[in-house]
Image (cartoon, rainbow, N blue to C red; front, side, top):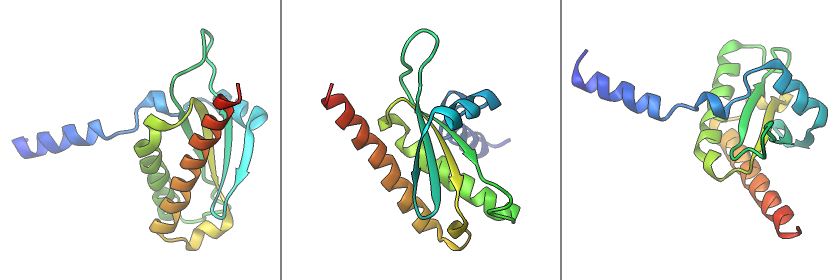
Amino acid sequence: MTNDRVHDARLHRAARLHRAARLTQAIQYRQVFRAGRRRATKFFNLITAPRITALATAESARLGMAIAKRIVPRAIDRNRIKRLVRESFRQHHAVLPPLDIVVTARPLIRNATNEAITRTLNEQWRYLCDESKGMNASK
């Protein structure tokens, strides 16, 4: 392996969405679906629940995705959507409040461009940040 390829591999790992920032177990998804607040956009449904660990309130947000085959039939499109969601979340992860977030797709997403999807997600991350600041200010 050449030095350039090693360097590229290290950069790729550094830009990865870490396991701690993802919902990884079915029970985590069930808790969010059961107790979460729902917010609908043109392309997505976002379900959010406060993230609480056994010891105390957690520090960072976690992402889960449920992109249904019924809504987005082609695997290439589902993968593209998941890639865009992951990347947008990764870029905003540091400023998001400690929430568990599940993103589901809506039918209009089939014809959406990458730019439209990214713009919608960016608006939602901003909304979650603003909502969290408003709740903290009222306490």
